[in-house]
Length: 313
Image (cartoon, rainbow, N blue to C red; front, side, top):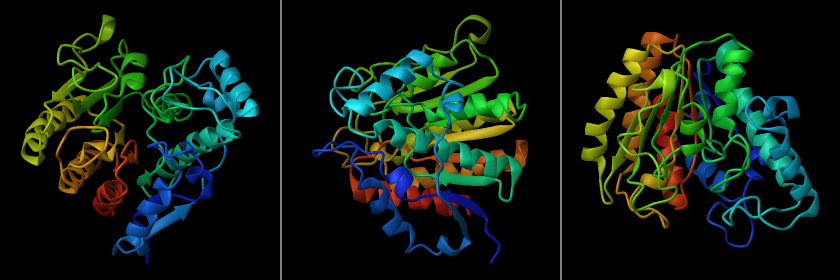
């Protein structure tokens, strides 16, 4: 059977998880894979392991000083990488580098073949800034993928769509003044949830003023509210005419997540993936890279991400 999408999976990215009962634990990968293996789409996937990103690749987006801090913390094996959400552990640099390498493996699979769509579950680490870790995110593989698509493959117009319950601040503010990066972010209202950003009035600055889209959702919003908001996302992405679409599909926006307050079902994620696939087919030869992002209820993330992969295939 000819594969119709690429899956990045395996121990290399599963190792990215924090210890001692942390919400972002290393069991998230296997919880998803057990669900995906039961799906009819499983035989239609080309499956690859991640590789470690090089330091040069990580520095497409991050400062050398930040990379140095992560390496030092990884060797020490203790302390925190940010204000307290992301504890260091021995080998955290290698685990984070594998996430970046996995996302770049997916990107190369999309842009070089054999299939135009890909999914990587342990990825979409959208809070890390260019010079810092934040919110469970050591390196921002989303930002690195945007930079790699432009530097390595010469793409100009990239669309980044984020439906994680948390605003993707590390991506948004890093490209806030870049009109060639379309950033559409549907998230729980920042007045109620970390990182407290992503107001509707934040639409870019400088040469990118008016080119970004933030859609904060009230706590308790469900699938009907999400679909209404996503119509605006579709129109926005369509007008940008991207050459590549990146999709951060955090599952912490489903009802029952332990640290958020939205009430979607997995049907919202299936809808978003299906609509973005249609836009990718229209504008960029089908090129769509989906990244798992957040999600701390294991059953929720397993179901939501499986529905995304089914939409991709």
